Length: 165
Length: 165
Picture 1 (cartoon, rainbow over the protein chains, first blue to last red):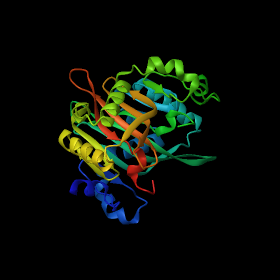
Picture 2 (cartoon, rainbow over the protein chains, first blue to last red):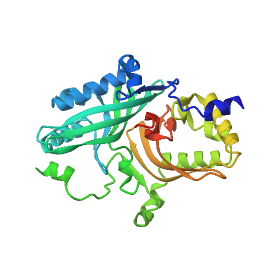
Picture 3 (tube, each protein chain N blue to C red):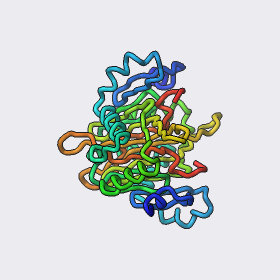
């Protein structure tokens, strides 16, 4: 069956299928593609958010979230809405003695017309701490003005399921 | 600082914070909670979808997706929209010689008013194949009639980032 072969064939190539967008800066063979692909509006928003977090520019950070967005502060503890998200960001910055650095080390964006799921490798580092790579999951929604905003920010990925997950 | 202590304290308990909902059937201590929590509308939809997939009732399966939903068939290959999703489901059923079984072994739902991210442990099994547990990510959207529908179905989680992810 041709469809079955297409779906389950031996080749394991990375197809940039409709609804998918991929950035993997470490992969040398993908370098040329990355230059064009980092122009994806959601990739640009995440870049803007990371820069703003690193500079503690929380006005810019909070403006990138939906009004009722959920941020996972740590597995089991969430901030809900812009006021709580801002307060959490400030506390996190203070906790890491203003040395927090966040960057993405690769991402895939799966999108429909108005909803997108980002699977990212997010590297979090701070002074006197080993850098941690998280398998982050971010959901973006388009608002009435066609702007993408972050609805769910879960940098812990499946860690929210607990240590046994 | 009280907030910092609250955010980063030693205790690692599972708080059912606003915007979060958790089901972990394996955890004996959570059994009582699970009975109530499996009533979450999205958990019920996923249960319905799994049952319909296992019974190859694809009309029921496809009705649970948004018109422009994205289904990851395998990392790098997506089906987009109900017609492609139905065709992929049929091909997958045939590929596994009609012995496919899907079930959830725990999930956390992070939700805003109209968007939800599900982090699930999804167990996929078929005859003559070892059962595989995937760290699945599902995004649901509410439609104009307040019904949750699946917008993005990525049972592979971060595997879409490639073998090096």
